[in-house]
Structure formats: structure tokens, C-alpha cells
Length: 107
Image 1 (cartoon, rainbow, N blue to C red):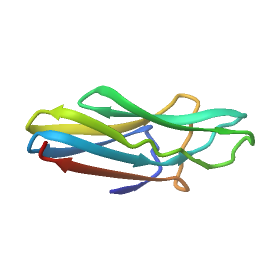
Image 2 (tube, one colour; image 1 turned 45 degrees about the horizontal axis):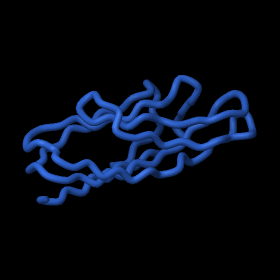
Image 3 (tube, helix red, strand yellow; image 1 turned 180 degrees about the vertical axis):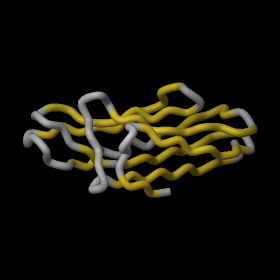
């Protein structure tokens, strides 16, 4: 699923799992008003499971966060929430895109 920016700093995605192992791939972009690190946390059921980030030297320059594939084992069968939340120093707008892929394995 692809979303334009994160104007509220957070998007929530619900999904059902048969249980087992998940491979989660999240990418996105953002900017800040000074040089420094920008990024986002990736949450599964309210727990941070990964981060994606990058350093920017130019203020106001949109940068792609480095994708950080995450393997999660032992995921319970049932409904889950996956969401991303930008860091306090990271801004997003309609020029930023986010992509989320969940692959489920039955082991």
C-alpha cells in the first residue's frame, strides 16, 4: 500500500495473519529544517520492530529512508496492526511516498 506523506505523523494498517513468520518491508521519505538524521519507527501491535532512516545535509531536502527489511518469527494467528510514525525531527508532506509490504510464511 502506498500513501502520500504522513501529515499526522502516523498511518495504521490492519491485517490478518495465519501465524508464523513475517517479512516486513517499509520505505518512505521525509525532510527536516536542518541537517541531521531523519526517519521513522515501524510498529507491530504497538511495539517498535524496526526503524528506517537516513542522514540529510541540506535543510528542506526530501530524502528516501533506507529500507530495513525485518523478519519477525513466532507471530500469533489473528488480527494485527502495523503502523509507521515519523521521528519528531522528521517532517512529511504530499511530496513524500510510503510503501509497505508484508510477506507471510507458514513457518
